[in-house]
Length: 245
Ligand SMILES: NC(=O)c1ccc[n+]([C@@H]2O[C@H](COP(=O)([O-])OP(=O)(O)OC[C@H]3O[C@@H](n4cnc5c(N)ncnc54)[C@H](O)[C@@H]3O)[C@@H](O)[C@H]2O)c1
Image 1 (spheres, rainbow, N blue to C red):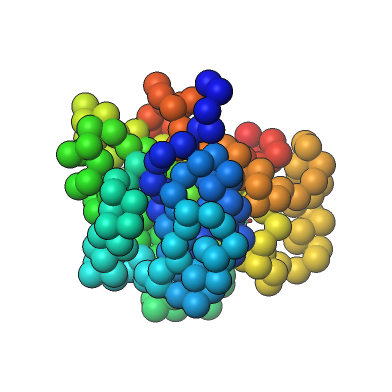
Image 2: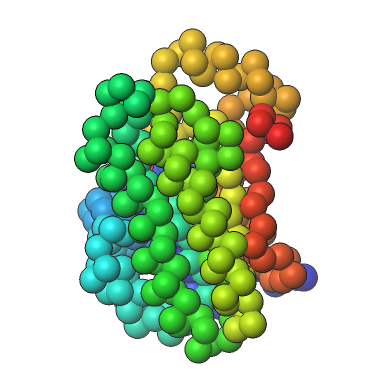
């Protein structure tokens, strides 16, 4: 394949103002896509989009059905199609069961799982008609192995795997692929709250011997988004440097 992997395609990335989402938007842009960077922090999304060609930044809270519908409408309005949807937005509210509130359990389920479902459903409406599309869900190794202090996050990220596989089975005959990735420890603001000794302990378990970078995730997501993965659906790819295999 000589032309850029996403030439002429339109992609939406949620939570794209920073971190892994921004790295994915940058990789997609380098690959020739028109990119919608969506984030609950609309100003940051607009500022990030201004650094890329053929990109727009918009505010979208993925937990809002109306804002998700508007986001998909803006993507098709600006670029004429929706070919790739990346469900990346999220945050953590870590606490042990003794201290975790119902509010923080629900908030984490809401942003990762309900948000990914709302965006998958809205994107599928467009992609089904197009008879093509790729949806990539950003799960986490925490959803495979479970992390103490993350009963909310691990449940949400495991739920995204079920969502991915069920949607892949529903949408496959319409030419729409749905896959997930499970990153391990990636250097972003999200892990800023982790204690140094916890990071050291995790490092000891990483065969590749380093913390991952956002671009390590973006490269795999670009593969899944592109025709390079034309016969891949319902897959869950770990991006962990080998930890938790
Ligand atoms: N960093 C890691 O080690 C790691 C590991 C595995 C999975 N992940 C997952 O990768 C994704 C990106 O994480 P990151 O590390 O880049 O974090 P980050 O905090 O740097 O970025 C997350 C982005 O999501 C946005 N966001 C939060 N709530 C939102 C909402 N309701 N609607 C829209 N946008 C919202 C934030 O404003 C932020 O820009 C998350 O789903 C996270 O769970 C991260």
